[in-house]
Amino acid sequence: GSIGSLTVTADSAKHISSEAIVLSKKPFTSKDSSTYELNFMQAKPVRGFYKIIISAKPSKEDKKLLGLTGAEVEVKVTTQVSIENVEIGVADKDQTTAARTTKVQYPGKASTVFEADYHQKIIVKFQLKDKADGTKMSAHQTFLKLTNQKTNQEIIFVADAASNKFDLDIGSSAGQFGHLSGKYSMELIIGDAVIENPFSWALGEVNLNFPEGQTPKDKGLDRYAKKPEIKHLFREPEKRPAAVVSTVFTFLVLAPVLILVLLWMKIGVNVSNFPMSLSAVGFHLCLAAIFGLYYLYWVELNMFQTVRYLGLLALPTFIFGNRLLSGIASKRKGEKKV
Image 1 (spheres, rainbow, N blue to C red):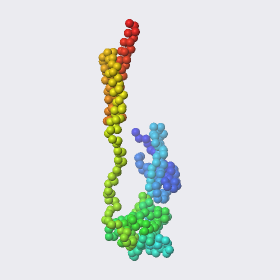
Image 2 (image 1 turned 180 degrees about the vertical axis):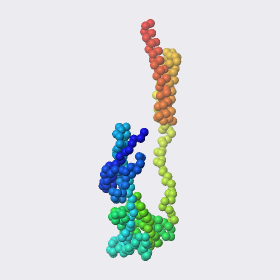
Image 3 (image 1 turned 60 degrees about the vertical axis):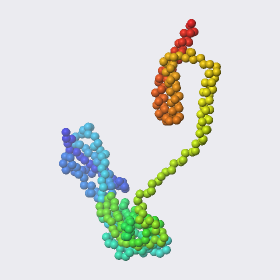
């Protein structure tokens, strides 16, 4: 059934980055029995993400109701941004001369084409301001994109987020340009999760000059194209010894068995007392099967296969062996009585 009316309260609202609390114990307004509203913007929060802790209290206490306190809701406050004090220039890397900069107003474009070689660097400076309160801010996504007007190759650089500045060393970045001289378009890209008006701004053009003879032979090679397959060469197995070595070793291993058989033939073997019962025959067959399994493990099987087969042979070997020994013991006991 219905739980009746609720008193919903925002216990606190805290800025996630700065941990500043912008409101406390702020009640929600009831629009109907199931909808409650809070005008969060009345607290005049600055841009960013906020964590709001919400609690609800029913008009009638009910111990069956759970989860009425400590509910967390994340809220994002967005804003619009403006860009000011934009300067574009070229300076020597050793800073022996002052940078020659040109001021540009958004969304305009520099009227002159900048000239830069591998001994110089391109400087782009700007300021981002929050239109709501006029404070300076930075954006998480601030890029300078240079596009070769002939090949349409795009090279993207990331700005220093703390200072909103690009300091592009042409010489050290020559590899990213493929050492390809020519005219490049400059484009400033600004974006952020809390910016409502991200933009891409064509700043102007720059003519880059790289030293001759540095251009790669294959200018059309795509740096993101499929690379040649890497084939791993495993270590070659060591050379095995001659077959005569293994043959001699095999004979040495079998020599004791051959000697035993020869000695048995010489002195004579008394097999009359060998019991011909099922347990005796079964035990010796299982024992022979175990020795055969050892041989297969040596030449073919792995350890897990061998253990599995050995487990199957162990049970009948134990049963036949136990009955065989019991029979021999009872036979000897009967002979002693006689």
